[in-house]
Length: 367
Image (cartoon, rainbow, N blue to C red; front, top):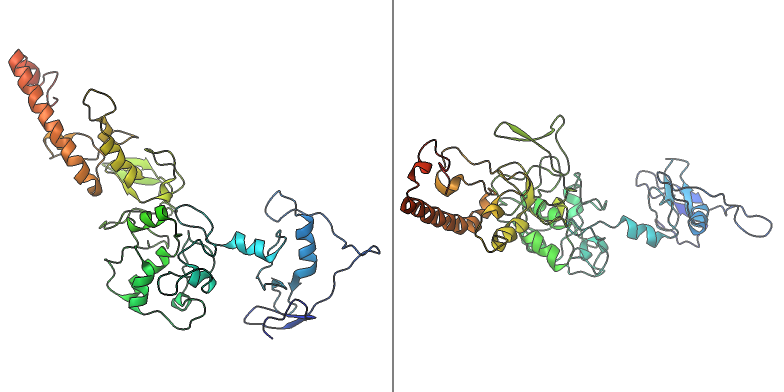
């Protein structure tokens, strides 16, 4: 048998290249019948292993003499899950995390149930799958095409099945099946929660050259630079000859200060800073903070600059958060600013303060 029962006197090495049968030798016990255990710390941490974890390791840890593989005699996990008192606890800790909320993806809580767990809580036709089975939704190495087959089924999925499995994720940019698989893998890292699915719907679904999913917004012509890694020697972004420190996925959004940048679709402003696109839109819609009309809420919250072009005129010169996805929200506010500027100039003309508006005057180029 490939997977002998726990009552069997033999275990088989789960390494596909080996498969050697290993005799299960009972662990040594003292005269009182208790296991001889020595307190140890979990490797790589300062935490001590519980007695239950020590007993599980003493009874279930096997090492193949032929290939040197350490594995669990109950669940065949390679390498053995040191520090866990049961296979279920180890499996729960190894479950992939949602890209946005960082919650574990477990049976019944994800749109991926059919592909992760063989139909434990999902829908064969609508649920995306685990692309590589390694539980890592943050890094590259998404696996090969063979891993796209759902649990319990053989073969690859058709284009129709892939589009259905991608759900609300953006597939409009895909022109071939390979690109659909990229979207499938990105959608595979998001749980069923309504807020997370809403964020997926507004996210870019392309995979960057480094292997990480793009953290930008849907429909962008140019992807947001990776927030999880930086090319060697790259200290940050440069705009208009000025260098900006590279912002990472773990940095908080400078508008909401609640979620990290990687927890929602983000945009790179003209000044080089990164914020959540929805936070920027909410900030613009909220308007000026007091009874007096002002327009500073349109500025970048970190530097107040915009990265505008030199040839822009009128209110387009005002330093606003500059990004294509914000134009629809900003244009009406800039139109209001133009109206305020015109009325202010008329007021100045009526009061005779024209000299102040001339070149070199105190208010040149200002309302």
